[in-house]
Image 1 (cartoon, helix red, strand yellow):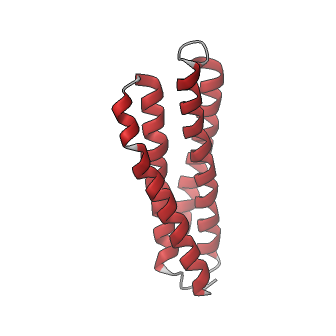
Image 2 (tube, helix red, strand yellow; image 1 turned 135 degrees about the vertical axis):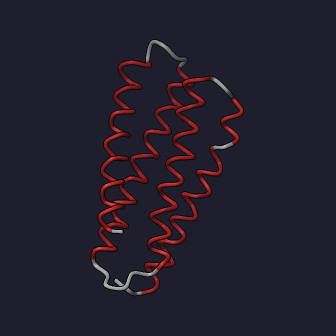
Image 3 (cartoon, one colour; image 1 turned 90 degrees about the horizontal axis):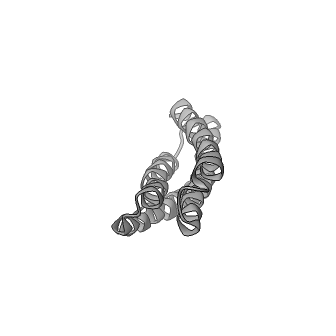
Length: 126
C-alpha cells in the first residue's frame, strides 16, 4: 500500500502543478475571473491532499502493522481529490452550476480522511 499511495501522491501532486500552470497560462483569457478562482481552488486542494497522501505513505512505511484507519485516510484523500477538485475543474470549465452540488461530497471525504488520520495517530502503531 505504501508504494501505491506514494505513486498516486506523486502523480496527483504533479498534476496539481500542471493544473495551476494551465490555469495561469491557458485559461486566464478564456474563462471568467470567478471560474479561474474556482479552478485554482481545485488545484490548491489537490496539492494539499496529495501532500497529505504522501504523509500517509511515509507513515505506512514506518509501521509493521499499520492501523486500518491509516489506510482508510489515504483512500479518503484520493476520493476527496477526485470528487472535490474534479468537480471544481469541471464546473469552472463547463459553467454547469449543478456540478457545484457534488463538491461538498469531496469535502466530506477530505474531512473523513483527516479524522481517520487522527484516529490512526492516536493508535500509537507508528
